[in-house]
Image (cartoon, rainbow, N blue to C red):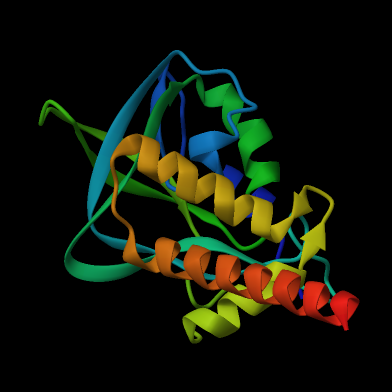
Length: 200
């Protein structure tokens, strides 16, 4: 089910003569920074929204039971806040493997908090990739996330850490927070049911 984009990404851009590149992170790249960087700055990109529409077969789920992680979906007038990292081109050797499950590198304009701008790259899983799951009701997405787990850990951990990171950035993301609320409600209901069953 997965589509390995590693080699495809390595042919998309030529970094000859370039010492550093800005990379925009909007999902786990905000809070799981396991790669070297030269500079880190909050940033925003325009015309995109974050959505839990991408399947995760290699990190937060399995090929048989994929989890859900975020990708970007075009929406005119929208703004997506995240974290930008200035990295050496060699770092993409590591990142292309991390983001290999359907994500491709695209060029994007970054807007920093002081309104200065720069061009950078962003990984996006478009709807034509093999792991794309597409839209679903918030409660259905939450249920899938709640039961999914993969080599990188539980899917709900990914969601909760992302929500926490977005609050730290001062970003109000209705989609992410609605799914977080749905999962918390499901957990509370499960705990309540277990307690009532024990008491009876």
